[in-house]
Image (cartoon, rainbow over all chains, first blue to last red; front, side, top):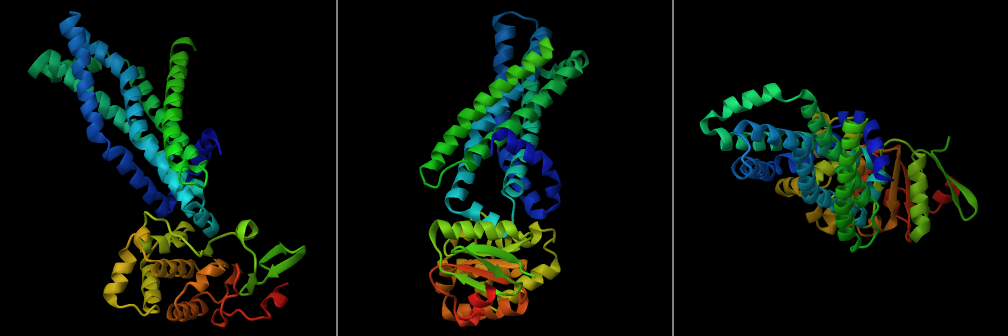
Length: 236
Length: 183
């Protein structure tokens, strides 16, 4: 099944969350893609905040307030969802694809089907949903880490005041767009990874092929979706 | 009323609830027949493969309760008590049972893996049990007798479809007349 087909099947299969084995897979996914990835995302968020503000404020000579506003616009509009998606693709999509490809290789998918357990509801849907939620939340944390760092860099101990002022001038549409991008990118990454993992052959060499193909295709999908967001936002 | 109808060697073969059917097929034909049977009967089905069969990143008790809870029943006290009762029937010592139930499926010996597959099928209490004949052939005699007793007690209405080179032993309820009755 194609990535889009898996995504659609996952959304239709949400009622299966009432079964505890499905919820258990979702919890594992949230832990693996969300909680375990948090330190890495926070580190990159802090670094991005510091780097962007340093460039704008100290090298280009932009005012502190202006630098922070630019940082917020850039981070919430592009950097936070894109970099979160790229980091999660590198970290989790190859793992997801190789896990499913290995399960296929070892006959575990056949076993589940023979027992009457749906592969899409038990394996794919919780992964897609988990990655959607994780990517949305991590995007928010990434942006928060970046903005707090930027505020500290330009205002020192007055960082909280700077952030409060920023919150007043930032349009809500920017925040909504950031969240929408995070959730969409997460769904796309997981759907592509699951499709590549399930499409693998029956030999051991298909596992690394599925993993690398999942990363490449997920990156292409994320960039294409970002382009769609830009077209919709500015030209629709 | 038959539970399942399969095409074998140009003719129709039917399996009644609680019936036994063994067909000497292998390879691609066997996979096709298993897939057809699985697609025909709704609800949980038992699956007893010659090799593999468990989800490697789950523990044995999680594997055993998976089909049961997937089909809408939560692993309540009653189900866990049934799991313990089934383990009683396998004549394992308490430390051995505890280690077995908590072990990751990927770390099991072939003997314990076959026992875990048997327990999982027992817990699901399916209408249809699909089995590769290798699963029976590789069971130790004492385990085979214990499991056959448990299946007779807990799944008396389950129909067995066994595909592979060797007919299962008589203790599983398979006799020479089964296939004649089934067809």
